[in-house]
Length: 288
Length: 288
DNA sequence: ATGCGGATGAAAATATTATTGCAGGAGTTA
DNA sequence: TAACTCCTGCAATAATATTTTCATCCGCAT
Image (tube, rainbow over the protein chains, first blue to last red):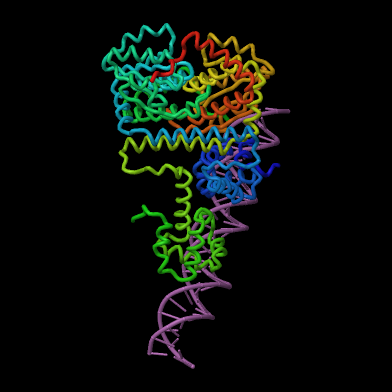
C-alpha cells in the first residue's frame, strides 16, 4: 500500500534522516506544497537558500525520478485538491468514524462561513475601535469558554492592554468594581448560558461600561445586556459545542486591533523579544 | 497593461479571430485550464493535435511573453482557485478594514480545509483509541496554546478522564513524575516553539508514555518526541497565529472520543446534569 | 492554370533547466 | 592533529524545452 501515500508524507517520514540543507528544502515544500508545485529547481533553491545541486539531489533522495519527478508528485497534490476540491470528498472507503470527523470539519467551515455572512462590518469596526481606545478591558466567560477568554487575554496583554479575566473565580470578583464608564467589557457565552456570566454582565451594565458580547443567537440572555452583540454559530447543540467560529472571530478582532495599533504594537513586541530571549522562552532554531 | 482580466477571458475574446489550429489549442485550454497549466509545449501540441510551432505562436498571438508567459498566466488561475474558497466571493465594495477581516476568515477556512486534506484518518483513529483507553491524560502547552489545553481538559473532564494540564506552572510540575507507560501525553506547540513545552515532552519521553503532538510543521521540535504527530496550519507566521485549525482538530477528536465512549459519557453527563442543576450553573430557559 | 498570402509542421537553432563531477569545508574520530 | 566522512556549492555538462527558420501546402483571386 506504499504508493497511495502522498509525497508529503514521504518527506515527513524521511525528515529525521535529512541533512540540514535538505531540511531547508523540505520546510519550503511542506510549508506550501501547492506553490512549490510551480517551482523549478532554481526557484526552490533560492527559496530554501541552498544550491541547485542540493535540490536535485533532494529529489532523488526522496526516490523521485529526478527533480521533474518530484515536481510531478507535487502537481498531483494540486490536482487532487482541485478536483476533490473543497467539497471534501475524501475516499469512499472511509469508515464510520472517519465519516463523522469529516462531517465535523465541514461543519466548522460552515460555521465560519455563516458567521462571516451574518456579520456587520460596521459593528466589527466599532468594536475594534473601542478596544483600541480603552486601556482597561474585562473579559467575562466561564466553563468551556474560559479557553476563549484566556486566548483573548493573552494576546491583548501582548498589545499592552490591561486585561482582567472574570471566570467565576471568587478571588477576582472584587476587581469588577473597578469597571465604569469608558471601560470595555467583553462577554462570551453560548447556549445553555452559564448563569454566572449573565449575572456578571448584569452588574457591569449598571456601571455603564461598554459591553460587547459574543454569543450564538439573538435570543441569548447576553444580548439584552450588550451595547454590541456578535453572533457566532457553535454547530449542533450538544454537550460539546464547537468554539471554532468564536475563536476565529476573536482572532480576527485581535488582528484588526493589532493592525490598528501597529506602531505601538511593534514597540511592545520589540521589548518583549528581549524579555523572551533573556528568559529563553523559545526553542532555538533547529540546530545542526 | 490591463492584466486584471484572466487569460481565459482573453482567449475567449480573441477566439473569433483565430485560425483553425489555434482554435484547437484554445479548446484544449478552455476545456481544462487547470491541467493545461502543467503542460509544456509538446503536451499541449499533442493534445490539440497541432505542431509545437503552432503552440508557441499561439502564445505570442495572445500577447503573452512566449509560451512560458502563457504558462504562467494559467498557473495564476490555479493559484487563485487554490487560495480563494470559491464560495466566498463577496469581495464587493468593502473598505480596507473589512477586506482584511474577510481575508482573515477566509484563511481560517483554508486552514481547516488544508488540515483535513492532509490528515491521516488512521492516525486519527489511533489517537482516539489511546485517549479512550487511557484513564490518565496529560496535556502540555504553554503561552498562547494554554487556551487550547484548557479547552481540551475541560471536555475530557466531562468524559470522566483524569487530565493534568502542564502549562509551566511550577506547582504542577511534580505531577509529571506520575506519568509512565500506558499513560497518554498530549503536546501542543506552534512555531517559535516554547522551549518549555519541548523540555517537558523530552522528560516524558524517557518515561515511556505514549505521546501525541499537535504542531504546525514536520520540522517542529515536537515531532521527534512524538509517537503520533498531527499537523494543523496556523496561517501566516506572525506574532498572532490563528489557533482555529488546531481547535477544530481538538474538537473533532473530543467528539470522536465522546462518541466512542457514548455509553459511559451519557452516564456521566446524566449525573452532571443533577450537579449543575443543584448549583444553578445554567441560566433557566427564557420565559416567553 | 498560375501566382500570392497566410497557415502549418519538420527540423535546426537557441534558450532554459536539470544533473553531475569535483574540490573545499565542517564536523568527527582516532 | 591528522585522517576520514559526509555535505555542499560551483561550474561544466547533459538533457529538455522553446523558438525560429524555412519549405510546403492550401485556398483563393487573377
